[in-house]
Image (tube, rainbow, N blue to C red):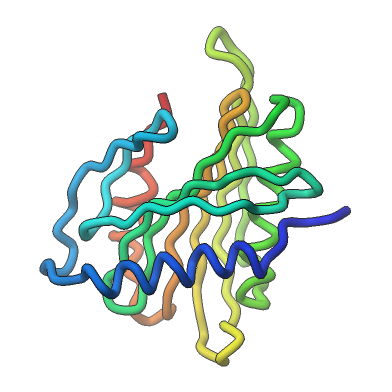
Length: 181
């Protein structure tokens, strides 16, 4: 199975980090609600976010992913969103996003939980993970990921940074604030 091109995902995160560093003048954890202009979601971010889009290869399907991210110290809070051409490909896209991000930190998944539902609003599924690993530069990282699909819309809601600096309270605030419409 071909997974997401992790150099492309890595490039998205590096661009987010660089862009955020240039605009990081606000106090730490000044939570604010952000509503996407590109996808139907809202989320709380701890600093003023930056948004950009890039093509990514998710399991052989090339999509344009829009990433909205903010950074506090060395911790990145980010939401990636894209639309798959067919709702049947959404679950494979979630798995590809998860695999690419874990691979990005040469990581090991500590915990994982999956859910799926079908109802009047259509099909939806999610994967929640906690993974640890190291960046290519050798820095230890922790990754919290919430990967969600709703019909043709897919999302990755992630927090990534040095394990000793990442507060579970901030992770919970960020991930639980994510709402897709």
